[in-house]
Figure 1 (cartoon, rainbow, N blue to C red):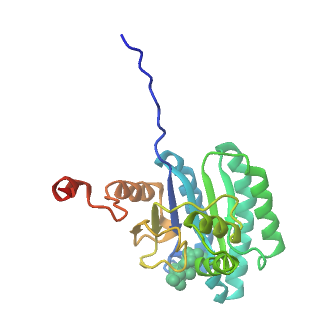
Figure 2: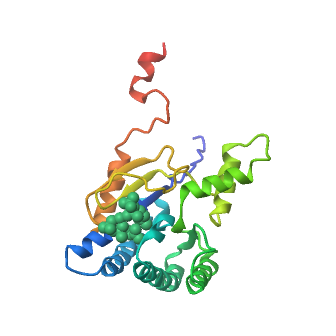
Figure 3: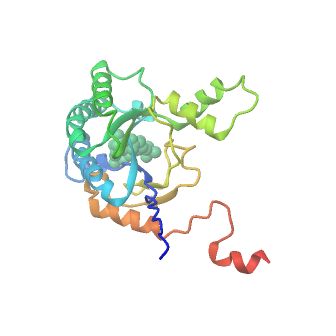
Length: 248
Ligand code: IPE
Ligand code: IPE
Ligand code: MG
């Protein structure tokens, strides 16, 4: 009998991005301050991070604070930064156990120094982990990042998409090249991108849910992933089912 070689091809790990919206409304519905919604939102982040690897997610990018969110009351911004700081410190600790690599993407020059230290400590402590790649977008604006990348490249005569992606990752301080998003989830009922990963979402599948972020569970994440797997991603090519009929 001929010896056969079995090639094991690992399934593609998905890049899922989540626009975690609805914390404020979740709190208002309970007569609580907005900061209580953000605090409850941190628990939802932990649930998503915990569930992600078993759902085939290799990279999880979470929108925590957009550059437009500076317009909010300084008290709310302060509360958010306080929560983020705690999150980076505590998650760095947990991440070691679960092989999670944590990083932040976005501008760093306007962040409080204590938050910046927490980010850097988490990144250093988890840099060698190669399980889930957890990226937290803080003071992030896709438009601004693209504009800065474009300015940086203005002297180049020819720029490939790959090169642009690499530079884009650099301007947002991402330790690794930013990969295309497979699935973008937005909670909270709104259906817009709000300046999140505009370049990387060129062919992302979009999943909108009315669930407020603090109520988002691992079952909701699983549902979104199932919905994603039922989609027919064509990237501009002819639909697979029609290809044979129309090609001739
Ligand atoms: C998302 O929740 C978290 C951040 C933008 C920081 P929101 O704070 O936007 O909550 P809503 O949309 O007002 O309910
Ligand atoms: C987007 O939510 C930013 C984050 C989730 C961090 P916003 O609540 O700020 O977005 P808009 O104002 O509804 O577009
Ligand atoms: Mg909102």
